[in-house]
Structures are given as structure tokens and as C-alpha cells.
Length: 162
Image (tube, rainbow, N blue to C red; front, side):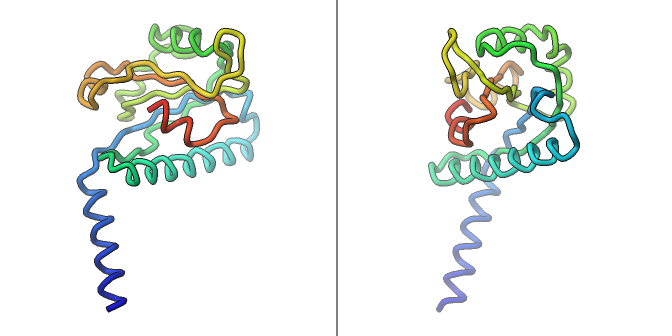
């Protein structure tokens, strides 16, 4: 009985993930957060852990999505204001030049700027998103789904913004 139950649970989990659409995530990380190889390794491990947690949120919410890291880039993000960062991203200005070409090359549906000390109108903020309330196909066709997230915040912030 016990083996049957375990096998059934494994089958249901794998069947659910087969039906889920993959959401490619492109991370643009402020290079001040990772100046050494060890810091980059720690950040990439933390992002991988957050994506695992994000996928658990999706499964538990019966959302038919599965996130995957498509690309990680380290860039000098000069802004700390969420709106200014999103404006730079959508306009492909400054450190986000060729953002959407890179996203297309690597299959990133959402591009996420990870910064320290993110602010919104002068106040500390965990995250801000653009292109919300659209279907996955609309987001993919627009290639304009962008997010700014504070590096100190959790996977819940990432899930909320997505």
C-alpha cells in the first residue's frame, strides 16, 4: 500500500509539471552585489533556491507555470528607484542596452533586475513589476515583462511581482 501511494504521488507531481508552461527568467544583477567569484556563486545559489520556492508556490496555487533560469547577467545598475530602473529596462537604456535581444536569445519571458536598496518614491521597496494582468502568450509576444526586486527580499516578492 505504501509503495503504491508513493508511486501515485510521484506520478501526480510529474504529470502536473508536464502540463505546466515554462517561464524563462532573465536576471540582471547589480554587479555591486557580486564582486568576487564566491559572491557570484552565492547569489546564483540563492536565485536557484528562490526559483525552486517560486515553483512550489506555483504548484501549491495550482498555477500551470514552472519557472526556470534562462540567463544571469551582472551589470552596473546605477539607479535605486524602481520606476527609474523599469524605465531604463523598457527603453533598453544604460546598463539594459539590448535587454530584449538577450532575453530572446536565451528564452527569458521575464527580465528581473536585482538591486540592493531598491526604493519607490524615496521609500524602501521590495519589488515592482511591469506588464501585469496579461496572459503568458501576451507577455511573450510583447517581450516587455520586467521586474525590479530588492536583493534583500524573499522568493515571495519574486512570486508576487511575477
